Image 1 (spheres, rainbow, N blue to C red):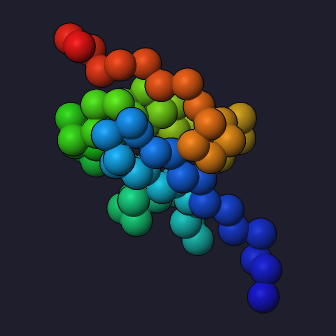
Image 2: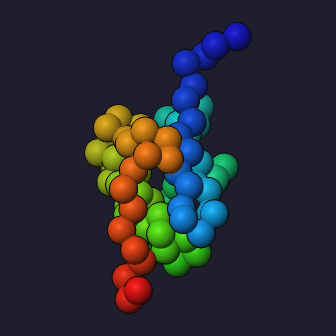
Length: 84
């Protein structure tokens, strides 16, 4: 059964993967966890290459946009982590 659910996958050059989906409640799930501010902060620390995309989804969630406007899986241009 296709419920229209979509998951976006983003892969960093260091091999880390971020998956983002919309949960049944409408909240975004990042790597299976509800995307709360504390989860977003932790992910930015743990996945510095993906920090920008974590912030993108955090902002989308706050605006009620879900996955709208998200880059194609694994195709987004990633900036090097700060300090590199």
